[in-house]
Image 1 (cartoon, rainbow, N blue to C red):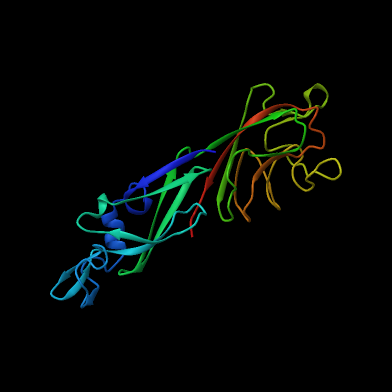
Image 2: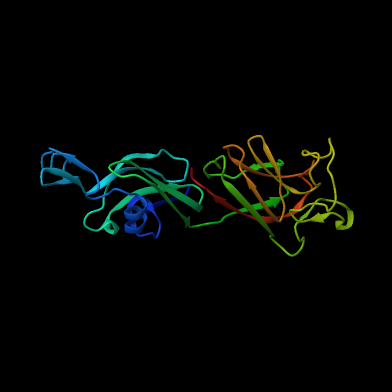
Length: 253
């Protein structure tokens, strides 16, 4: 499993200046909310005393990092003197690709802001080779794809010959790429996924079954491990394969 520590300006917001994101997006920071009668430094330096009134130096926020993990709640953001120097760290694991970080004010200011960035490697490369021992293969050592994630699959043959997978027909009569046999509709019991194209790539996420191919996009309907499969009732006489490139974009709340 790949791990990357993402340390960004305030709330892990990639390449976005905190002054513009939080200073403008979250209203009511320094000096705009006042609490009368408070003592200097009673809150550990989160505010200062001026004319008998408390002037806040920043605010508390909740941070959704856009990866399905726990929300960071009650995070103090100090906007004085320069918010662009304040950083909060978060570690992303598993899939790279697009992330959306959302910051919601909870105390001493108000507003909600978000930003998107791409974490490298944006694309995960998977080898899909035949012959196989089973039709289904789970993408190993990767985090679950979460419900609502956008998944983009593209494939590239691993060799010019065969240009895809040779499914064992005489004289090479059934060599297909991930799109499978053009115009076909697989039927049971010869194929494990009736209704989809014969000899095609199939993607499965829990109970969600998606027709694969050379360029396919879908939205995850549930959270689970991504499986790559071939719609063939006998994988032991196959030869060849293709590279599967997987991009998973996590959209956040």
